[in-house]
Image (tube, one colour):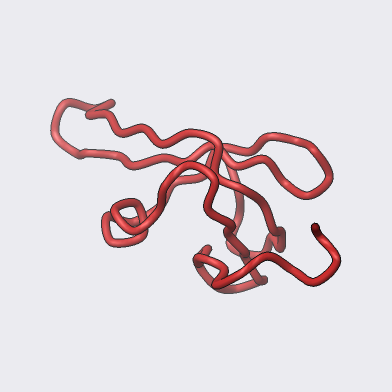
Length: 76
């Protein structure tokens, strides 16, 4: 999982949701970071619905993850 102060950029590889405690629906994304590692992150409903597998995400310290509009330069 990530913390509020983490910073990273990566690609969504899987979307899932579950009622782990029987009453709250948790939405999670599996993200492959630019360094090749995998990370599972919890996101809110609006972001979860907006994203598809293959979409790019970025996270800056102190902020929530957000969708990248386009790939970073030089990533072709």
